[in-house]
Length: 453
Image 1: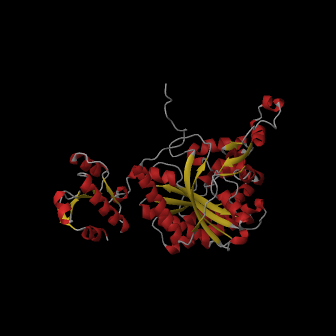
Image 2 (image 1 turned 135 degrees about the vertical axis):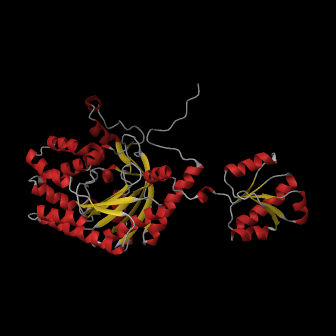
């Protein structure tokens, strides 16, 4: 029996119409990246595990797809080690490479490796797939695209302000209503210090980052498991449930964190970033969210997350400031800030809200019908002239029934059908039919070209 074809869970195939829609999203994002002065790079799908491990926290490390070494990957492992079934230990000896988890850590590696060729500050964008060994669910995939923009080599908060403006521009162009949520990792550190739990900052941020998924009660339960006292948990609750305007929230936080130098610095940075985007003007909602943590260990300042307002789905863009990510690759002190658009979730939002323009499905502008050998040969000459003029055109390959040929043009939403029959062959003309209005007109190939020019 033939094997039933399938693909791994958490991955997807995309049809031509789906690819047209995805490319519309990629092109919209790419145009904005270029408009804001970012330059494109690419990095390999796989990196050395030494590059990836330890950059995403303990939970992130568990989600790395590891690649078995070529050849006999067991040759350096004893039977006793195999029987112990210590999976992390075995993986460290059997796997030297892994699929990239995101684009930021490979970018940091790229900057250090190519630092002599880069002008600082360096603004890069990157649109490539990443892989995570996560549990697949709605809006969460094991293979998905990220569209990243980063600035390295500058400490200025103007970069954060510009990135917020970039986010606003992209989603305005896509027609998606969003809320940009902003926090600062220094505020979170100040909170941990105020709670008397500075050593628990990672545990606190990892737990807080789950608040939208599991609720505050479950977050509190997780914090208890990590060793936070009941007093600290009660002090944290009003911070996570804080309401009011951005100014109100920051005023309250400034008072709560008045004895934390780190926390006050975070409040000041956040105030400057929010004031900057307000001064530029924006179409979206921009909100200070003191519960926003994002569990990645490398954020050190501003934290950014974007939610779609009209669709129930997870974060569709995120990012933040990382002051010393390149330090682990031998280049300490280089500050950076970046964002990542989750193209697959944006695609799901666009599909649910049907936000695509009609013309994105029109890959071919003109289809020539096929009446036979002589007519097809002349039509192919016309097709070449149109293509030379930059107009997408094609000939139906077989001399099938006209109804069948027209059905294809209709199904493919091709806006014009060109007819070259016996009379058109004699006088060197083309009968051009508008598939929307149903009107048709005899004209020369030059006239056809002029319609699209």
